[in-house]
Amino acid sequence: MTYIATFFSHFGAIRYKKLCDAQGFAARTMPVPRSLSSSCGTCVRCEGGFVEPSGVCAEEVDRIAEVTEDGYVFVYHSEEHAHGT
Image (cartoon, rainbow, N blue to C red; front, top):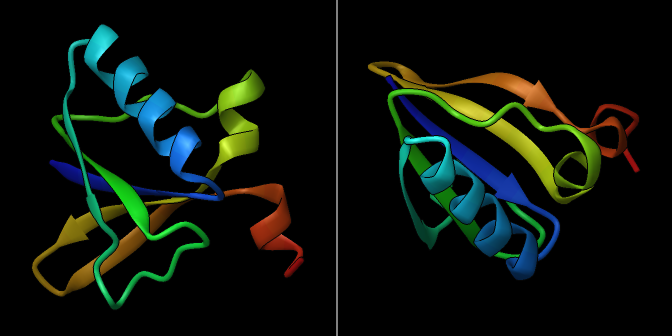
């Protein structure tokens, strides 16, 4: 499975990519697809799974979506995103 994580900052994306690499998930940074908006414009594409946001990581992750044949299905929303702030 493929997942795309969006972030509030470019630094958060870089740090999350390193966490994915350390957990054994193939990950790369890339521009956010147009159909997924992001505060910083950088996302991390993860193959095979994703790192569950917790601690400091949770403060940096905006949303995580699973890539499907029909588009995207969100599997994680930050508290800020869920409350619309």
